[in-house]
Amino acid sequence: MSNSYKCPNCGLELLQQQAARSFSCENNHNFDLAKEGYLNLHLAQHKRSRNPGDSDEMIRSRQRFLNTGHYKFLAEGLIKQLSHMSSEQRLLDIGCGEGYYLEQIYRSNQSLQLVGLDISKAAVRLAAKRKLSAQLAVDSAFNMALFDHSVDSAISVFSPISPEEAARVIKPGGTLIMVGPGEQHLSGLTAQIYDKTMARTGNFEALDSSQQFTQLDQIELLEELHIQGSAIADLLHMTPYYWHAKPQQQERLKNLNRLETPAHFIIRRYQNTQT
Ligand SMILES: C[S@@+](CC[C@H](N)C(=O)[O-])C[C@H]1O[C@@H](n2cnc3c(N)ncnc32)[C@H](O)[C@@H]1O
Ligand SMILES: [Zn+2]
Image (cartoon, rainbow, N blue to C red; front, top):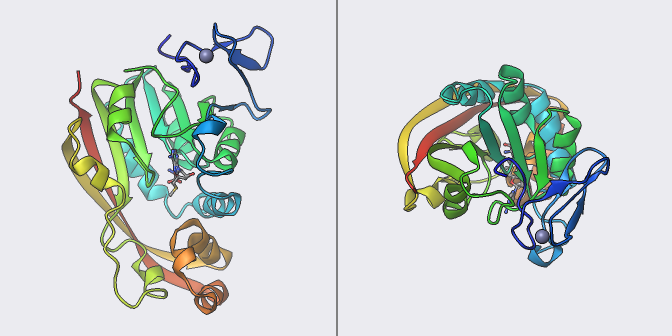
């Protein structure tokens, strides 16, 4: 039961129909598996827009940028913070995007059971194409189609989070790892867009006042990046800064040959104190 999805309509277990590419519950709510191998469990009546989450263009830019390896050091730092996990344990990536971090985790430890959820269908489709034998679904972090206490640990990399919902699905005593921006994150890029430096708290704020989690520790990772060519435009497109940049700033950044900027990350580990 705990490894399966929970029907978003009625809460019963979703079972895969034999020889069929679909899942259904005893109440006959039916969900077809997309050809890439993911489920869409985000119900139309819960959607705030037609295509919620990051757009196709943002997702593709992020995939191209991440595939250059500029953020590999973050993936490696994240993997070290997961060393407490033993084989066959279930790890959930909340807001997994196009699956870069899931793939890095999979390559480092194929014995974990990986689950990835994101509200963007474009993102989950690309994540499924990575063929990681992970359970992947289009779903909201605020109402996940997973049973209570059904994952051992979860990660959230620059994604929205509901502490209440995360604490419901993570086992009592289990770990939540959040990644967000450090003070100097992408300051070489933002200096081209804003006059003043921007204070960024990422999604940590949601956890600061949380009754469900206590912080265990925090590490910071900082690297100077030398970004060249089209990867500069991809970096701009994958961040919200794109929407804040004026057309002439966008143009200037796109025509740069080289961008120097620190990438500065904070990785915090929290423990689920709910019982
Ligand atoms: C900054 S991206 C990070 C993606 C990925 N973790 C990474 O670092 O490459 C934020 C992600 O959160 C997703 N997202 C936004 N709102 C969400 C929600 N309510 N539930 C789940 N995912 C959401 C977006 O679609 C996007 O893929
Ligand atoms: Zn149902």
